[in-house]
Length: 409
Ligand SMILES: Cc1cc2nc3c(=O)[nH]c(=O)nc-3n(C[C@H](O)[C@H](O)[C@H](O)COP(=O)(O)OP(=O)(O)OC[C@H]3O[C@@H](n4cnc5c(N)ncnc54)[C@H](O)[C@@H]3O)c2cc1C
Image (cartoon, rainbow, N blue to C red; front, side, top):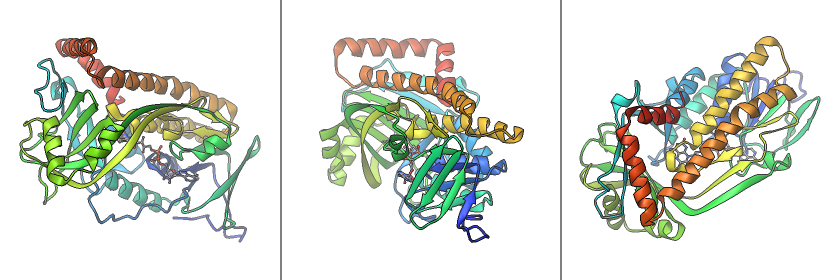
């Protein structure tokens, strides 16, 4: 797979079109998509790629929208997923307080509102297995992981030098190194950050009744609580993922509860829809914040994924937004490749920023507003959101417009 890494001339150098810093889902998918079109790419990660066969079920999962699924198919990743992701076919949106029945004004997106599922729940571990397998199978991918690198960029090109002496020369550098992107800060690109004082508890649950491919988004004063259907296993035939936001201190306290009390708190938020619930595997706690980069480009540099933007997980769209960057960027780079144009030209960089930044900012503002509107117990806002939920429920065309946007199609 590391073809061209140690160059046959002994120069220990590789010449590629694109060098990507960060082999997370965004960087790795971009590499697979471009390599499939015959573009030579290098991928650098400071960590070793996670092991192919992670022994434990770890409970983390991504909601993959339809547009993202199309991208993963075009990149040759989808077909390598070790098991079929679970389709989300119904979404129930409710408002309430823990332990109390949800407001009777609920909003239901059903399979009648769309021509295909709203999304697919893929285990993070399964996506990693598929990404690693695709990277390894591609002769056009040069991988440096684990590697600490230094980067020199100028109008002429990019040179990436690893501490062990390996060198990559490229025409364009893509920073996909996550929220704390060092590549972004080294380029002097500022970020605006918005702390929420909330943390997300992420875990898996097994439940008594089948989920029937239904998801629940329950808005509570401490933050949104989401149940997302997952493909069952032999041990746990009825399985779902939970993404549960709470104020920081409360989230830490809840995540440390003994199993039985934790199950009781889950049940108070989920109600009896899926019968008795049992937490499965590890519990993860992530501090939630949102941020956006002031610009997405610098000389021969493009920011993508969380390096460019981080949003509240209220709509499960964080990675999907990163995949939208990959879709736009791969289209531009494939077109430039076919025409023999420079992939790091100022014109291409400007087109990328114009295509992605305004729509990403819209999603940033929308998820921020949703969280502010729903994560509180103010009676006026409660009435306003219940009316909003009821209004969307009454108008099928409005419901379909919401669905289309969230699916990224
Ligand atoms: C609680 C929670 C729930 C979420 N749920 C969802 C969901 O349901 N659906 C969804 O779409 N999104 C979800 N998200 C968001 C999603 O996890 C992120 O948007 C996604 O991981 C971003 O991918 P990325 O590849 O841009 O960055 P990352 O996943 O952060 O990957 C960055 C990579 O860069 C590497 N790296 C970092 N620094 C360097 C360096 N200096 N040099 C080299 N390599 C480096 C890292 O090792 C890593 O491999 C959720 C997030 C949270 C916090």
